[in-house]
Image (tube, rainbow, N blue to C red; front, side):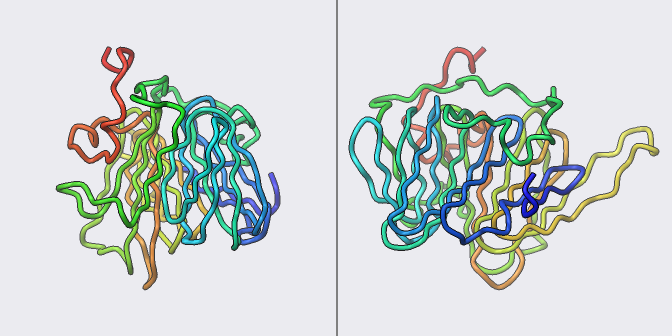
Length: 285
């Protein structure tokens, strides 16, 4: 593992993308059981390619524009947006300024998940994590790109704080707010059979973690409160109670990651692009 990559936490894994944040042409891959996140730093005019066997998220949090060139043809500018790329190999490039991009996927055909800098934390599979499979089918032109500018994407009815997007194998919540989070309205919760990733992009956070007590008090563990600056990824395994608090008088951007897509959010009508997908028989079974 490179010296500037740090991995910490015992209840959940917190890893950073290294001290090179802001430098040019640095690619770092982190992973969980079910998905991986790669950070790309590109200087003006620099290009790189990414490839996946399934749809993937490309996050462009900066307002500096980037360019996506699709394998199937066509180019698209993105800035402060979520892009959903079709399967295949695609090129991304910075235009006028240094940009930081994040690629989130359940499969990558150009790089092995075992090459992630935190791969040693996942050498023994967690049997509680539900296999992803391909729970959804894309309707319409499955070779087209979806681009959702965050400022133009409405909040879903009944949830004025988060914006929700899905691919055929995963979903994300884009959480963005000004100032610290109200400590009297945190939302501790756990998941029975899937992980949650929390990618800190802007602002500082504290991840609060707790393992539920069992009958044997000798096995109880202390709560953890992990400081998470920008450029960190938290992976919470099933069963761990967790909530995240944005701290400090600044803008916060946090991306929650799930694979497969969150069916409870779909049932509530929160997923912005749900109309482009249908469940497979595999997921209905």
